[in-house]
Image: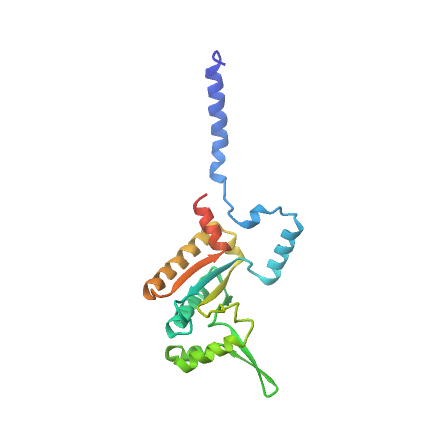
Length: 212
């Protein structure tokens, strides 16, 4: 080894250089799907459902108030975050679920009435009676009470589906996270008594990518 150390060193440097040329072609995949074999039945079923129903990656935003979420300020926060998400190119605008997008169904006089849970035209002038009416509708609907709104009525969630073509791209997901975090920070400063949380698979992937 000592005798031919020059040749050995040259070969090592040459091989390192040859392999190093391809470093620029390396890519990262922080997605959960990268951990599952592509031929696994569960993976194949997941991709089939994704093709049929659309985005499987969702952003989840939790909003928690100190006492009661049925206030004009909290409803305004929900509305502002909802419309913000709907306007993002990475988000499927038809797959954003919140108190300000869901419809309430009620049987009356033999008919099924379907109307928005919250009348957005009256949003700026919601009074106590209107807010109590919203609370009553949520409590009477098992799809809302305990799911979209917590049982203690202090917290609610907004769920937004990320379009597949963006959810598979690290740069797109990182950009999406940056925009959503900035919006949440802005609202937190405007409404300091309300706590806003951010979660979901795309956000997790964005944070993992930052530290890889």
